[in-house]
Length: 409
Image (cartoon, rainbow, N blue to C red):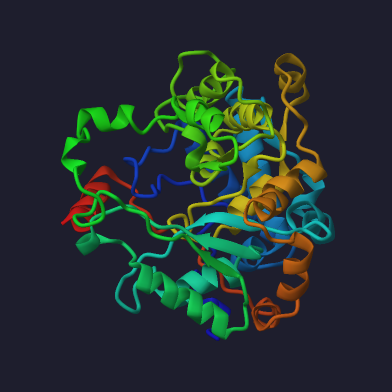
């Protein structure tokens, strides 16, 4: 294991990562002025509080106090900008009190985290997205118990990860005795030659966006009540600000509208998944309050699924810590009927809901994962943790276009 000083010895990287990284499906969105102010304030807090706790910046930022102080800085910046509809519910003392901070940003008792949208990118060994980095970011540097490795639709000769490579990653995890730690999506990709004929009749270009929306989800969900529909990203669109529900608006509202128009009731067969959605909404907790509030109301508290779209965004630990502390402001809950994010609701979203969909017992999975060699190796690793606090997705338009060029050939 490398020494701690080998990674970010000066503590320049924040544990909660606010940046413009994309998952490769949308052009990176630059940080807002409020986001930049939040990052600046978080760095100021780190410098000040590390001195008061007699720690180096790096060691302070590795602590629970480091994560808590970063989220508190985000609260302050958002409040200064008038964004108070959502916030990270952390007492100010947690910035200097490690046991208190651990209670806030650390795992709850019997917490089970099932990430239904993870990604591994098949690249040469040594690249930031190699197998070793994937395993470390997900299973060493985060509290994720189980992850689903998602399949990314593309041409067979340009797949970011082949099913064979995905299986190789799964086998590496299995060799660590991490049974059922990593699940795989089966490949169903009809736009590849030989998979299905007649695909030349489907629209592309300008029309493809229209056909990627959620307006027909309610139709098929009503028609096939015995089929579960997992809606990845929940209809979220980066260019649409999430506010109170308005029929006819783009974004999450398209999913809500489709369910309402077709009388698909909450807690039925439609599940809203949060990969990239939560990561983007973290940048603006007021949007997060509206986005999550609408999804929980429309789909039901048992039908919202945890997903992070990592490792595009590096280790998912910061997304986990932010969600552990996130709360919808009482004023918005009262005005719009949004739910309070209670410990029980949080536990459902983190993993219990997905366990039901995948036919797993959260209690049983937690029981054996707490005793497997992945858990033992992580316990040893956490004696001298070395998280990178980095993201890997494209961060500029140029990087995004270059990624598309490589992916699409």
